[in-house]
Length: 215
Image 1 (cartoon, rainbow, N blue to C red):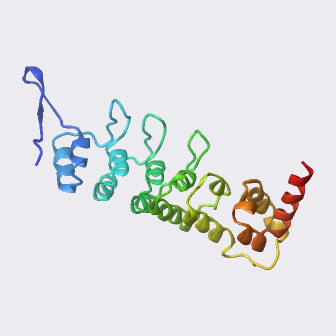
Image 2: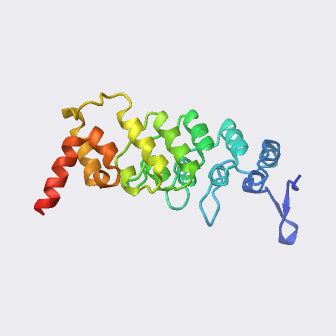
Image 3: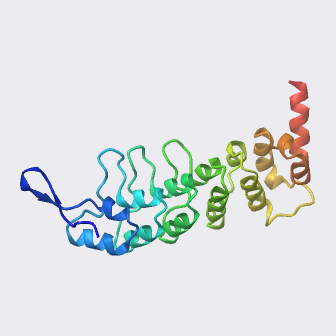
């Protein structure tokens, strides 16, 4: 195991950084460092990452669970204002996103740039990003139409479509979903997914096509 104390110049000793223990993804190492005086929520002087954020971004799920269990603050952001849930979403860490949600984090937490964790997950093109999108949708996050505009991931697009309409009638486009269909049409979904959009949003797609012709 890593030495528990780091010797600095001049023979002065200081408590080790918890980030070093997190790098082992070992709860035992984390506890040993804490016992030696490491700070649970210390932020890295360059990245602003807490040990928890460092664990999230590196996919160290065992460390994430243990840090939360001993009281790590999951609301502390790194230098650019991104909290652990945003980091998990951007990296496509579905298991860690679920751990954070189970801990009580707000799935709709909005960064100062206006984006939620769902949007960050929608940016990703890997299967793991779709899995993270599904974790957030299952947690009750609204299937934001903006995801359809920013994603290039077909499976993510299918997930957003499914969670938008799964509890709604399919026959026609009722008044209560005109707004959603209009947003989808504006995002270009009538052209990108014609079969799907004609089934669910025939009125809005027809209106959108007519407007484009007039322009």
